[in-house]
Image (cartoon, rainbow, N blue to C red; front, side, top):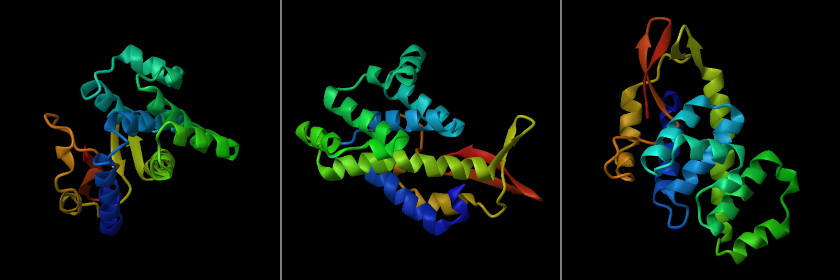
Length: 193
C-alpha cells in the first residue's frame, strides 16, 4: 500500500530496519506488540502476518496466541520485556492514564527513555497503519484489491534491500507494505511484504 508514495515507503523501510536491528527491543517482543495492537484494531492483515511470525520464529502455538490475546500478562517473555509490552498496551488503549511512575518503573527494569519511547512508537504506529489499510485496501468476493492504481513492485523492491535477512532461514519479508498488480480500474493484491 505504501508504495504509492516512494518517499514514505523509503522512510518506512528505514523505520523497519531500525527496529530489526534494535539492540534491546527484540523481534519477539515487537511481534507481540504488533499482534496485540493489530488484534485490538481489527487489522487482519497484520494479525495474520504476526501470527505467522510468532509461530514460525517464536515457536508459539495457537493456544499460546489465544492466551496472549485474552491476557497479555500471559506473554512468554522475561519480566522486564513483559512490563514494557503491558506499558505499550496502556499507551495504546488509555494514553491519558500513563504516569511518571509507569516510566520510572520501566527505567528501574533497565529500559532507557529511548527504548520506552521507541516501543510506544512501534505500538501506536500500528493504529495509523490499520486505518490506512482499512481505507485503501478493500475485500470483495474473497479477494483483496487496492484503491490506488500506481502502486508498483519496483518502488518497494528499491526501498527494501536486505530487509528479509533479520530472520535467517525464514522466507519472509516484514513490512506494512503490500505489492499490487495494476489492472484497469483498480489494483489487485499481488502479494504482501
